[in-house]
Amino acid sequence: MNHPHWVAHAVVGVATVLAVFGAALAGARRRAEPVPTKDWIGVALVALAGGATLGAAFSALPLESLGVLGWTRNGFFVLVAIAALLIVPAAIGAGVRLPSLSLALDGARRRGAPLLAVATSAVLSLALLAIGEVAFELVFDPRYKDFPYFPLTPIAVAVAVLAGLRRPDGAGTSLAEAFGLFGLLLAGLYIPLNETLKNWQALWFGLICLTLAFTLWRVRAARARG
Image 1 (tube, rainbow, N blue to C red):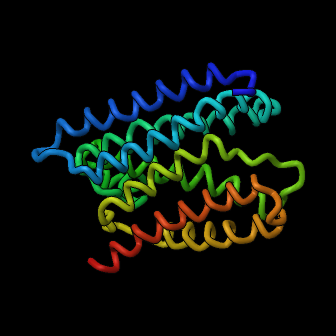
Image 2: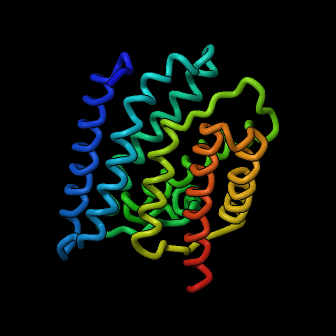
């Protein structure tokens, strides 16, 4: 409560939680059977991650954004976080499995696919783009770089929760998931060690990388099991 914008953060947090559960309820209308308890627990985890970080992400936006490029980059992260907090809970409520990247990126697969599944695949693709871009910077040019962990945390948590609740749809899995998995795994280990383990921001971002790596591993493992 000693943060100067704690009231605004609390308001955004409550609004985020309501939006997450509202999206899940909207998705549940598409489901023939009642939503199981484990799915509601998953929705609650997504709501917790978003409610705890989205307000701080808005506050950090003007502080960490330098010039047009910085505003575009960090604004993109916040928009992806909002999309993840609305689309993934809807997918959980509807019983949709996490698709591979190709469902959103391959026009042939996208045609005729359910819109919610395509949107969920798009969130996973944007998550890999956002977190992968920051990881690439922090590995190869870490000087004077911020750790945008507030907007990236709910993104990573949302897709990981969906991947953990039920086996993903591994159809169409390609080298993109493999490169993303191993790249994020290496970044998640290297960045905290390079920044020293005393840097809690580096540890936090390392966990974000490892969380998304787990998600991609689940998608690849689903394909291997057929």
